[in-house]
Length: 385
Image 1 (spheres, rainbow, N blue to C red):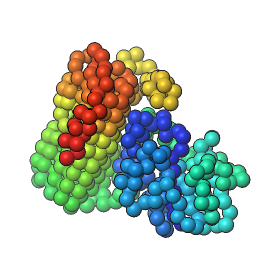
Image 2 (cartoon, rainbow, N blue to C red):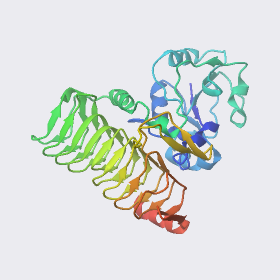
Image 3 (cartoon, rainbow, N blue to C red):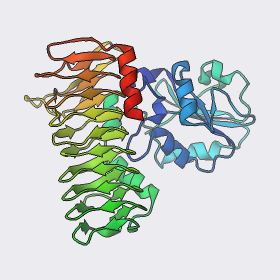
Image 4 (tube, rainbow, N blue to C red):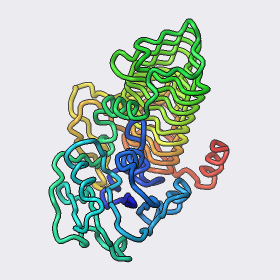
């Protein structure tokens, strides 16, 4: 039963994070959306197929060299929407039961296809709307599709706790934990191979599990309050405080990080506050950068939506910063509540930058000009090296 994970038209709402990757490669806790789908259908036999927008097909193929990108394997195929935040329950049970049968079946949430099983899809199945392959569809009650940027942060503590439990290893401390470090509820803490927990660090799993990945480092006096996921080679700097957050591969965080996702390869290594926020890859926040996640009037936060081309209501009181890949900001940068920064931006200066900073912008509160692409790429090459 090969699995085909596909993008649909709604991924545009997730820009700028989807300008440089497929939507299913977004981290939504300890794992990506794709990681969750592969885990849910771990019995899938045959190659993984991925269907994306043409614009990100090449980078998707590079990210997943063993997958079939833009084509289907022979035989029956299970289709899954790349925005599906899959969890155990009725829909997952129904989809699993349908796999391998002779009857095509599809499940929708409103107008969105969530999942489908087809015993013999035609060769041109990916060249037309997938729902055209089915005579009808069943309503996927309770299925969660990530549609907007702020959906990436919903119930983040529960997502991290779920993912960390699925990763396993809780209660195993394979790395080096200094005798003066405090591990509260050690049975709910995993310290991976080669990881280091330095003197005076506090890992408190009272409110949720903590996963410290292979070769990750928790420096002196840092405090982790679960649920927390710290990916391979990630670092929590000395005296850093991390709570209900996921810090991806080879990222560095310091200061205070609360209910946020740092996708991977990004740095917020200094003092400052990051709350209810999402950083892409290769981002860097200068020392004492702070994000506001609550309006002074305690009202509903609006966020720029790329499809609407305007700010739209989120229905949420707490929303911080969304930053696209390769964006940077200087020391003492202040981000207003619900700010969206595009890819390859370089921000500096006093005052608050605009709450929507278009991709390839250079400047700050006093004005923005285009960031020359040749210079942006030179910086990216230096950082990625």
